[in-house]
Amino acid sequence: MKGLFLKIGLPLLVLSTISFGILYFFDIDVAKILKKNEHSVDAQIERSINTELLTTNLSSDHFAVVQFNIVLDSKKAYEEVEKRNPEVRAAIISSLANKTKEDLRGAKGIKSLQDSVKQKIESFMTEGKIERILVTEFKIQ
Image (cartoon, rainbow, N blue to C red; front, side, top):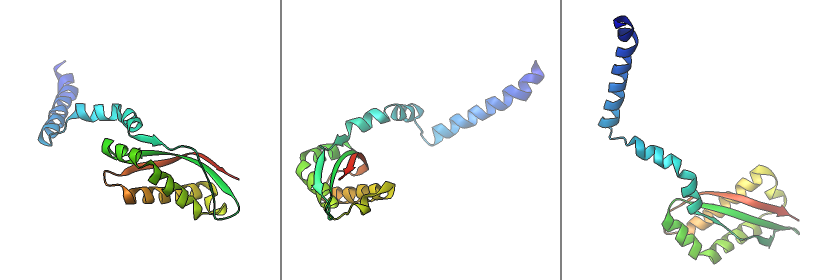
């Protein structure tokens, strides 16, 4: 029994002591990290805005129907973007007005649109940043 403790128990005891020492030395709050991960989806939902469905002309003879979900990095940023709804709509419309049907094809086209909209919205934001923009509805006719 004593030999088993020396082979397994002692190394585990030393390893756990070193681990707790590192956590204490760097002042790492494990409970806070676990809680943050646990509520990250709920927190994102609280900071995300769904735009209304927008229909606008493209630079070609086509039109696009789009809807976005905008996830912001803070509650203040959420409140600001919510208040600036007309500017958000204008940023989306102007981003689409410069595009053709071919520009919006495939994943590359959607990524380009997301980047363009993100850049335009962040240009007038004074509180926080956009974490990500998702295209949730997309049709070209």
